[in-house]
Length: 124
Image 1 (cartoon, rainbow, N blue to C red):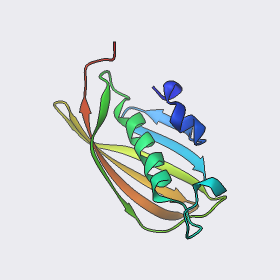
Image 2 (cartoon, rainbow, N blue to C red; image 1 turned 90 degrees about the vertical axis):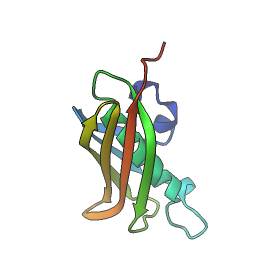
Image 3 (cartoon, rainbow, N blue to C red; image 1 turned 120 degrees about the vertical axis):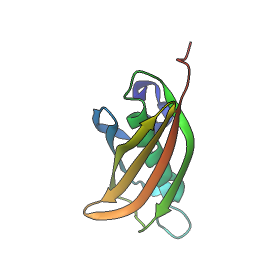
């Protein structure tokens, strides 16, 4: 799935680890990702977390998509910061899953994301 994800590749998102119910990715913040306050636009942090969530919920035999997601921004980041996102599966039941993603830079947590997944028929 990640190999076909053009948007994530164009943002420089790299896959670091992948196992059942878990994914770890990284992305370096560039100057083009900053908002008018010269800090990282929240949409880029969300995209990193969402991509990592998608990878984790697609580690099982059935394709899955996001049914719902939310994020809490805790600290700002700036150009040159290297973000790491870790997704962990919390529960799977029926066609549903719950995943938490923690986004860090260095030893600081900058965002917490929770995503609900729903399995779908395999793409044709």
